[in-house]
Image 1 (tube, helix red, strand yellow):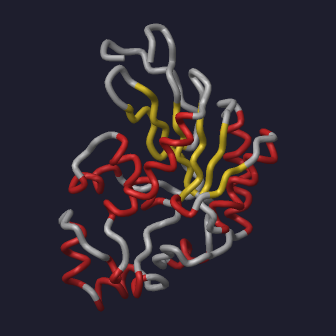
Image 2 (cartoon, helix red, strand yellow):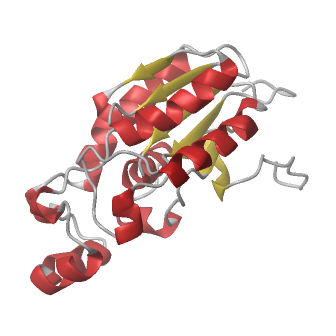
Length: 215
């Protein structure tokens, strides 16, 4: 984070489409494969992300993320380090249910979660517990980057949102304000003078330089 230098970057890349995404089902830690559309999304995005010249790739070990990461590995020649700490939120009995089914069966808990209260959805993990396991994995990988290096983290929508919230030092009640990521879209964090900064969110094109008074 020296003057005139870009600093390190973290690219959080969500996996490609699955059948449960199409059906609107809560996947959680259920190991669902990519659809053919999901594979095509991963190949397209990998060609774009390769232009960022990443130095390292880490990924959730669930197959939808691992298969997505493999496409970037094929283009860049980088190995992928898989880590269970990057898995999606475990959501117990909610996994496999649609959003409508969850609201019908667990309406009060669902409403509390949407209000930002700490809730174990389906008897599973708290969002802060997801950040507790995922953020250290990301930061450990960042520490191994060269100066101005770029890390690509291939994970899941909920896990990415909570990890970004933790790295930006946001109050957990406000993590929902970050919004979701579309399949195979990404968010970019860069080193600022005092902390990490959100440079891109839910992007499907390469980041453009930001020219402004507060950079």
